[in-house]
Length: 214
Image (cartoon, rainbow, N blue to C red):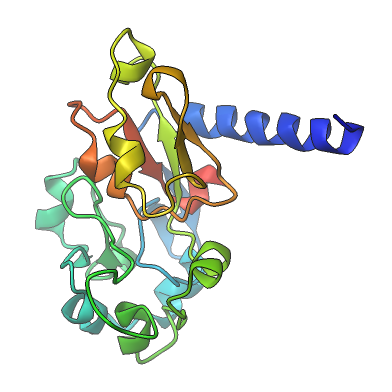
C-alpha cells in the first residue's frame, strides 16, 4: 500500500472518530450571525446555515413538494418533541428529523431533479439533478455515525438492517463481519434512511449535521 493511500485511510478513520465523538449528542449549538442556532438536518441542496437562514423565506414549498413528507417547519412544538429549541432565525425553516421520517432522495417518483430543490423559489435549496454521481457530489445533509456501544452488530448480535436501508449500499454503508455497519463519509449524503431503519432504541446510527460532522 502506497504512502498516499495509507495517509488517506488514516485521515478518513481520524475524521470518522472525531465525528463519532461529536455525534454522541443529538444536535449541537453554536453562535451564528443571528445568535444561537441549532445544528439540524436541512433538506438536500441547502446552503451553508448562515446563507440558508438569510435566503430561505419560510414558504413551505419544499415540504409540500416532498413525496416522503419528511420536511417540516422548525416550530417550537416540533422542536420540543426532539428536545430542541429553535433559534429565533430558525423558526419555521425546513428541517428533517430522520428518526421520524427520512429523505428518500425522491426515489418514489419519476423526476429529473430532487423535488424540494426544484420547488425552492429563492435558491436556499440549490437545484440538484437526480443522478447518483451528482447526489454524491452535491448532497450533504450530514454524515451517518455509529455508536458502537449501542449497535447490536458490535455487541454479539448480527443485524445489518441499516446497511440494507442505505440507497448507496456498498458505497456509503457496507457490512463488515457480523453485519457491522461501516460508513464511508466520501459517499454518505446524510439522507437518514439508516437512522430511520435502525431497530435499536435509542438508535445506534444517526445523522450528524454538517456543522458538527465537518
